[in-house]
Length: 94
Image 1: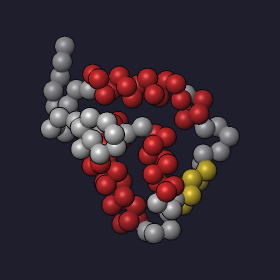
Image 2: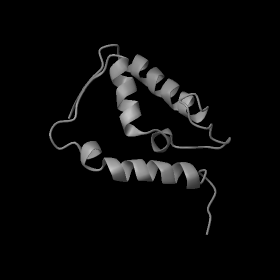
Image 3: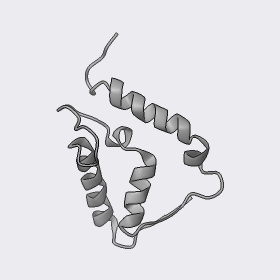
Image 4: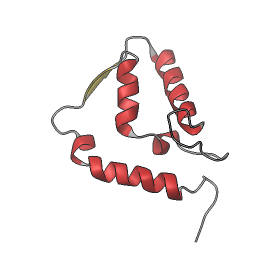
């Protein structure tokens, strides 16, 4: 795997924050998440996130052993499951 982003680390960090915020607020065509504490990487779909990074100028080569392609159906199912049954951090359900 190779990842290049020529605009610098600060710009990449800001982009990641903006993408996470747009997901949580529901600006990507999905419902907003309720107020809580979340791990943003569990809320975003990998294909969408990688496309957004590429649109911002990132060069990403996942190589032949791309787990996103081989496990695409599983990843999408997990994303739907997380969205419908996510538990905010700090709350334990039993």
